[in-house]
Image (cartoon, rainbow over all chains, first blue to last red):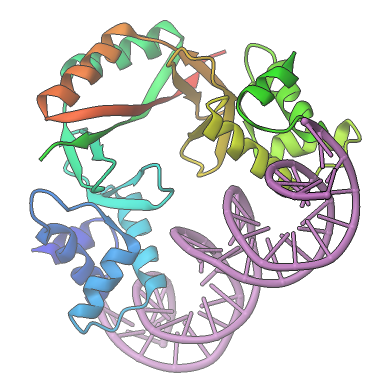
Length: 135
Length: 135
DNA sequence: CTACATGCAAACCATTTGCACGTAT
DNA sequence: ATACGTGCAAATGGTTTGCATGTAG
């Protein structure tokens, strides 16, 4: 099933790619926000022989293919998530580092308005809310 | 006048600090968003003998003192601006790299709402809109 | 006089790249 | 068979740090 997705974007179906795709899909509702290092460690735990460089290469290819989104939080680490198409934003707990997603139509609207008002052709945006989760 | 500001936050008044502060203040309405490298180059042009490491150290100290904000756009370069207190967001032209500022009370509001709804104590946010400026 | 600042070079660390070898198609 | 993928080690580039010297207070 995943193999088809790879072919569709012109990438050969290889083990590293399948495994990385699987890892991105497998993560539960939370914690499907992984750094390249995270993905690499999970691969090692599964006794897969994949180099970190390959993880970076594959994630970058996935990003270019629109399969994956690259996020830059304040720790200047790239974190990756499957691109589900819904254009959600992120809420990051400054204590635990956990990431929550949300979609807010009002904000979405304002962003389009602002781009228009200022004479910009909107190409994207990045919104991250930082806070402490109480629990 | 700037010297007082430095003393107030417990930093000794030195030439590199004064110069860097001056550079941050001098920039016109646009383009007061500078990387460490930018600041360093401007110092060189003014024949100031300041090392890049010092620029980084000073900017970081200014950030901790609340004099300066550090921004992370998608090019993973830190850019710095004076912290004017108004909590504005940014609009970046993907073609020219030019940065515009804006404040939107509606978005500000929604961000507070969202943090509250999700049970987070809001500590900050980062919103960058990317687009192409037509002109 | 003493604690803090600075310059320089070296260290760091996430990410990228060159290259020789493998493998999907 | 051939273009593309991979692992490894080395390179990169922004940023930080150790250390010996300078200077603000």
